Every structure is written in structure tokens, then in C-alpha cells.
Length: 234
Image (cartoon, rainbow, N blue to C red):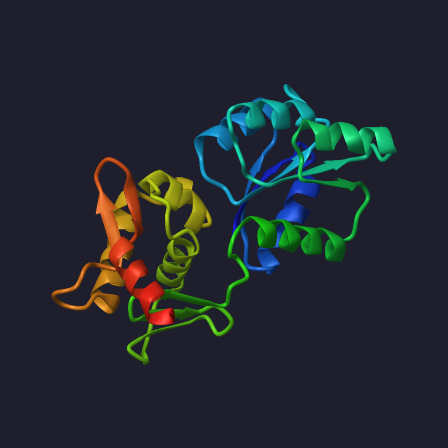
């Protein structure tokens, strides 16, 4: 599951893209203008951005340039009706990682998304580990010491997200935006409750919690459990 930012002012197209991607298990957020889209890119953690070239306020190529100038490394796919070789070169030189001319089919779009995510992270690893906990993404199952643990869908989604980004801290706001379908209607208390339930189901008495908390940084997967997982795999 990836969290994908769609910066597209054509609402029917944006909703169609969102539906395509969510059928593949991803979560999407739609922004309709360039300036707000750039703010989101710089302020929140996404796994991929899909940006239309022609946007109100700030064009897609300018968004790419300004985002890359801040050191941003998120993979970006550019969508546009411009299809000449020069246009493609301009988009790629601006900082896009891929360039998809309109019109395009769902099969090609989803394949390109998978390729970008595959290059940038471990999204397509099907077996993820933290200490004695194992998440099998193919079966949507979690076990600890070979015992199956029943997680609610949001608990599973949150755990999978943290396990796919094991070295990163995430604030409450970032986790709400990544994991919940409509974060505007969910409070930080819902996140804390979700984390509490995961800990109750997966933590081992006397051992570090599977989810580490740092008041200054947020939440992440436990470093100690990750070290144990690495040692066990050697």
C-alpha cells in the first residue's frame, strides 16, 4: 500500500485515477492546484506524486523544479497532453522520474506506478519482519512466533506502512494522512487507539514495543526489533 498524491485540476480525471489506484490497494489524495500541491509535497510524506503539467497557479514542471530544489526525493510521474520529444525532455529535466502522455490506459498507468515504487522502496516485498512478528502482504496476514494475530483493517494498514518504512519517524498527522482514507474526519486519538491495539496484540512482555514513540519525532518501527530481525535472517 502506497500513499499517492494526485495533483490534477480535472476533477473527473482525478477521481478516475484515484479509483484505478485504490483498486490496486493504494491510498490517494487529490489536490486541484499547483501551489497547494507543492505545499503538500514539501510538508507531508507521500510515496509517489502524479502531477499534471498544466495546472492553475503553478505548472507541473515548476512544481517539480521547486520540490527538487528543496532536496525532495519522492518519485514523480508527470501527466500531460504534450507528447513531443522536446516536451518529454523538459519534463524529465524539471525533475520528473516518468512522463505519461494523455490519453493513457489504466494498465499502463498502474504498471508505471508499480515500477516507480519498486525502484524507490520495498513496496513489493511480500514478507516483512520486526522481531518475531511477520507480515505476509500476499495473504494480508500477521503472525508472531508462528501464531496468527487478527488485526482490524486499519491496524493492519498502519502496521504495514510502518514496516515498509522501517527507518523513518512519522508524526500523527503524517500517519493519519497515509493510512486513513479521509484523515480530515479522524482525530489523533483514533491513531493512538489504533497503536495501542497493535501493541496489545503484538508486543511481548519484557521486550520493546513493536512501535517506538518519540515525542519530538513521532512513531516508527522499533530499532531493536529490526536489529533482531536482521540477525535472525543471517
